[in-house]
Amino acid sequence: MKTPQMIRDSRVPLLLLLTGVCINGYKPVIIVHGLFDGPKEFKTMFRYINKVHPGTEVKVIDLYDNLSSLEPMWVQVQGFSKAFDDIVQKAPDGVHLLCFSQGGLICRALLSMAPDHKVHTFISLSSPQAGQYGNTEYLKRVLPDFVKKTVFRICYNRVGQKLSICDYWNDPHHRSRYLQSNSFLALLNGDRPHGKMKAWRENFLRIKNLVLIGGPDDGVITPWQSSHFGFYDSNETIVEMGNQEFYRNDTFGLKTLNARGDVSMCLHSGVKHVQWHSNYTVFSSCIEKWLT
Image 1 (cartoon, rainbow, N blue to C red):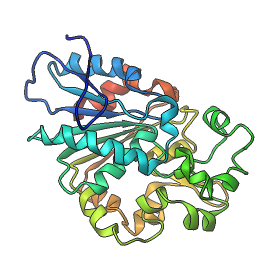
Image 2: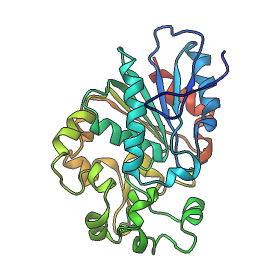
Image 3: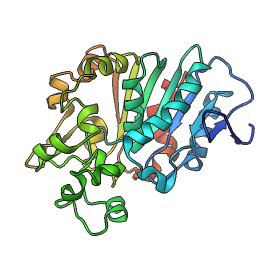
Image 4: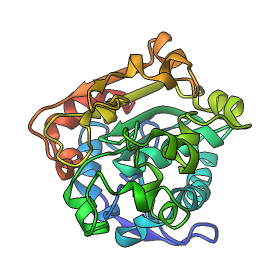
């Protein structure tokens, strides 16, 4: 196995390219990291992939690492898009997309905006796909003077929308403020109608498989069911994916994808948020079979 190398590209300032010795018919795997981390957290995942599928190209996009992951979501989507397009154009047989935590939302935005993305399987690894609402260590780190009941005061204004976590903060007690002020998740989920909904839906539906991975002991994604497109109602009771308004209205194609039989959910207990990408049981039972 080759040592990971840093590759500089004229279009993409930093792209960490992790490659095996040669490709043996396996599609390249593109990885997008989450909040407060970067490519180094995925060295174990690289080893897992090349153990079961030797020679697979594994490319971890090295952008918006660590504190830079707090940049606004649309800014990050634009940056990741350039790297994503460069990789996909060189993969005529398509690619797989594995995206962790906040990265799962970035990837869904990429898929929605790219009309010819050629992504076969999109693996969403413990990602707050339906939003985030909880008191966690991550929240304390970003907004130490706020708790979940007061975060809306900063998130749902122009200043707050310049923080990535505010772009998917979904306060069930302030739904009208969310719909009015959120500039990312409300558009991505079709909670607030916009002129690009039809095109985004068609683009998203180009994927062949959607794999949703999460579990009750995550400790960061709140509620954890958000990783499976579930979320709180105004009483903080969980509403599962199938009863979510965006699902019933099929605003971005999730219902259609599920009706096609192309949505798979994988649940694991006992896995903390920072362990998902290094847990071999998670890899072998939830990820491995999709990376062919």
